[in-house]
Length: 256
Ligand code: SF4
Image 1 (tube, helix red, strand yellow):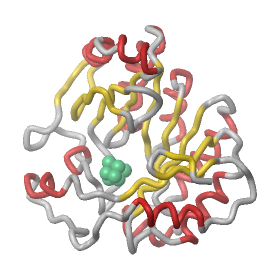
Image 2 (image 1 turned 180 degrees about the horizontal axis):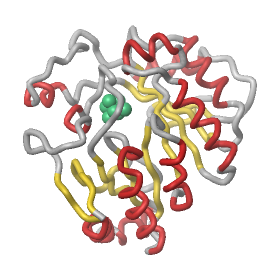
Image 3 (image 1 turned 45 degrees about the horizontal axis):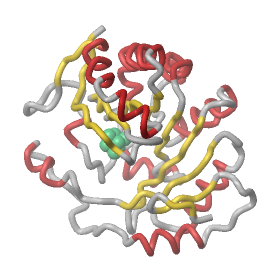
């Protein structure tokens, strides 16, 4: 089948184990104020962003990097946008990759019906989930929706998929969600599930600002600077832990 792809990037070291080929799909139901890929949000081609591809075309492109996957322990990662907005297309890509022996992962906000995730779960090795903030009012203000569906989905996925490697990521945005209470409550939520391997604190960045200009859109957070890695480490170290798992990661290193 055909789907809408934003772009395919090679040799990423940030989107799963080893070297990853990352397939960015277009369309996202959320509207995070800090979104660094605003060109991924609309599920249509706009300003030249986006390309219709078949699942076979995507897999052929991914397969070109098989030698790098073999030597680095990498594979394919589907990202977005929101992968689960094109779950049928994603399922076809992941199923074909698994058949070829390619390791698979997705990055998702989990803001989707649970049935959409169930379509792809048999073909997944690892799952990366963004939890932006635990406070629901703040989530509505900064992301545009409630976080109930996201947290309900994550809890259900953990229970239904005990062997799936699950990684949680928090994009840390100064003055918006960089509080001890937010990190603490995220960790406390994740500690309930043994298959959540780690919680990673990712520093906010402004890489997408020029794209907002190209799209004719305003970027509301231009006054906010990226946090220093040292500040993220202090934030991680301030959290009180009940369990050894999940580990807390900053700058790719296990902090706690
Ligand atoms: S979930 Fe990701 S792609 Fe969607 S708006 Fe938020 S940051 Fe952008």
